[in-house]
Amino acid sequence: MTGRLEGVRVAITGSASGMGKAFALGFAREGARVGVLDRDVQGAKAVADAITDAGGTAVGVGVDVTVRGEVAAALDEVVSRWGGLDVMFNLAGLNVPMRLLDVTEENWRTIMDVNALGTLICIQEAARRMIPGGAGKIVNTSSIAGRQGYPSFAPYSASKFAVNALTQAAARGLAEHNITCNAFAPGVVVTPLWERLDEDLVAIGDAERPGDAMAAYSADILRGRPAQPDDLLGAALFLASSDSDYLTGQVLMADGGMVLV
Image (tube, rainbow, N blue to C red; front, top):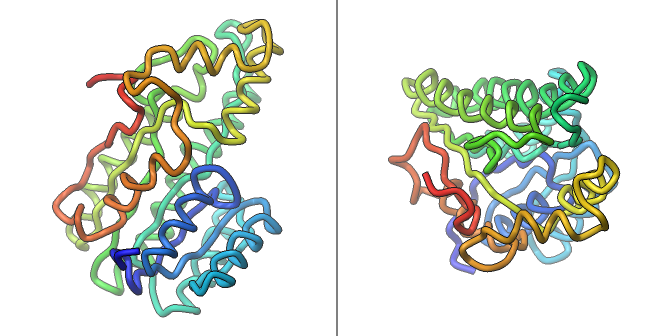
């Protein structure tokens, strides 16, 4: 532990499992006070308990990022405990693949509501709590699908392109308040989201058996394998720490070399 985030007040959505959990635990090891936010209330509290049991500082809070009142209440809980909010990490997201010609309005709205609208709400509510403190960092979660469209992930790709646009808009709109906004873009990561995605692609006929889709998408990774959540922790720490103070409006590719832009 180097203490890169000593005393920094961080809220992370989608942090009961997968990348969010890895980031919450990793940030706490670096001295951050972590708000573990997730729809899975028990999961969020379990991660927070693991942090406190290890000597860190955390609180687990249930939140649906598509409901503004829940986001506001969760961030108010963080602010009331620690006196402010320094970093907002927007990780909550989902993907329900459908072939392009089969995409329904319900599928579109569900994915866009969580990934795009949820990101907008979290940017807005975090910024409102950062402005009185005179500074802040907002980090959004893009994807390789925010750089190119995939035919069985059309709404997901659209939602991640939207995240990129929101990142630029927030960087410009919040610069006067000394708030930066960046995003990072993972590729294939071994998490519950990708494991479910792998099963869903079998169900829609894009793969023959579980594991095939993940292997196929991973074939083009220059680093030779899909990421584990901890592989992305370094990029996350960079974006959350003072090391990235002069960076804003950018999307950091963290995909092992899948998409070169």
